Image 1 (cartoon, rainbow, N blue to C red):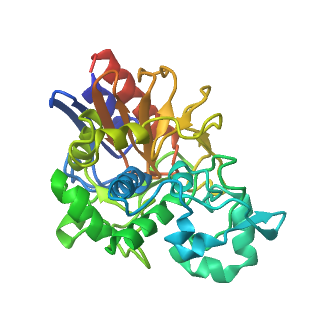
Image 2 (image 1 turned 45 degrees about the vertical axis):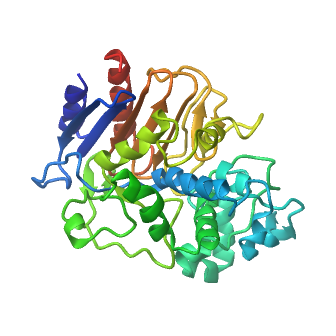
Image 3 (image 1 turned 90 degrees about the vertical axis):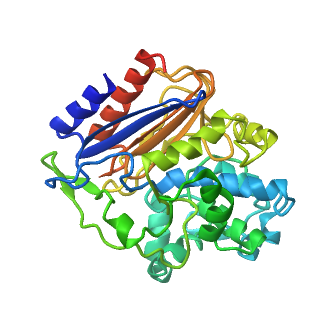
Length: 373
């Protein structure tokens, strides 16, 4: 059934290529795949196809931060400005003007997206600020890290550059670059050889192209170019990976941390960290990148330390207490402890929230639970 759903998505033009998998707590796995890596080409996608997983980097960075919390090198509730001096005196943007924040930013704020940051593609305020400060825009990714807050830390939930700052905190506390830290403490121990910030030339040959939905509904593929990480490795969205690799990462959440983090840290990561606040809605200030959508409409979704938490059973099957998130180019995962499985599906389409990709995701999820995975 799952295979037929993916094949139908390719035939209808909803996606060019898609790979999906389910990993069960008992170690058994299911894989389905359909389509091509580049629209109009003949290279088929499979579990070893390299995808840009974008914000599915965030859980990896969150795990890294929690490892350092366990070692006493970071603290969840101490002012993060002690580690990252730039954040010691944050400014809040209000009606085009800046004022000092009253509340110090903490690592917990950054991990829960309650620090006050947003993204330029999700905030018209950031768009206006960057237009008024073109020197910030010219600095690219470093410019992201210079953006002001939009609200007092801890008072609202807004999806933003928070996890990029978490990545910088991991670097500062460990004395290692983020890519080196990931490799030594997460990727190599899990056998994730195809997960990295900069794919090798050989891995580039296995990459899927990013496709953009055109006005007539067709998909156009962008050229596959070598990756330049710029000024830093983005802890919020810089990783490339495969379905085979990401299954290994998700499996640790089915096995009490899998030796990567402690069961106590895992429990802390997967509980509601934002109280009565609601998580999951991301507005759009750039429709070519993101449609603007709610990741769990109709529910009072929560956030842990790196994940959306689904408080009720979802319309397509996932159980209450499931965790999940996504990447900008329409990669998705969820972890369902009650069902004892984790699932991942990868496509490469912009904008995020593309209806063809979302339709494929929903069909996959429905089929997973129909098969009682």
